Length: 293
Image (cartoon, rainbow, N blue to C red; front, top):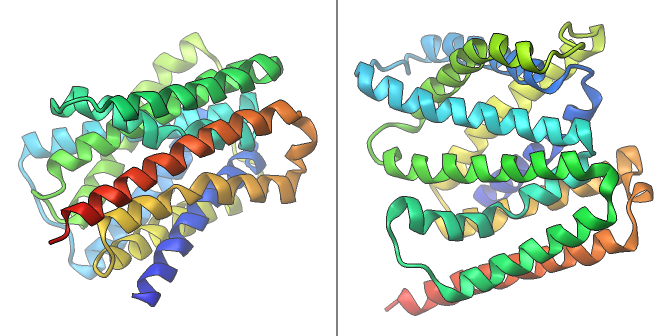
């Protein structure tokens, strides 16, 4: 159990580190995601070929999994866009609302009953975002894009729940990332015609960061994540995932001193969001204990 928790926390820490890499890499957000997926997909196909883990699936399943991967790719575009338009701290603060957004969106997509307490906690998080938005107008575009990023990752999570029992984790990862790469490749010309980006050729050092982002923060973290799931519960996993924004924000403070660009109102807004997330997790913990015989 201790080894599994260490693996999961290592994976979550590395996911938090992606925000730092997103700021260091000079590419604009869509090209950053395109190169990340290019390196990741090529590496995964080669790796799975030698490990003999490539399994064929029906075209319908391929299309379904690939579309979810495209939504995941759009989430990354919005996440890195939030970093480019604001900073790592703002992007991760918006991402921290995803657990609460999930409690509001899942009932709609999975046709479940709404919980009044979840709605109240969601309002707390919204109040926190409103405080941050109104007191940091210079980051307004980044905040809006960051919230869209959180919404997209919730949609991916809900859609993955519908298919996770039907396919092996390796299949889902391989075909989702491949679908994400194919989708973003088709999407790029249309996006560039409306929102042309200037930084589309990686600088020499960008290649190093892109390889680290693809191999360490994507492929390696996936293996850590999957191995840890064999020993720990889904609740522990969800609880640990809430640490990702905290890890990322601490790293942003250490590497870039982003705390100097934030007012005290940011901490008040972030405190409201954090309070809502903590109460949400405590409710899940009580429900889990009550469900035990």
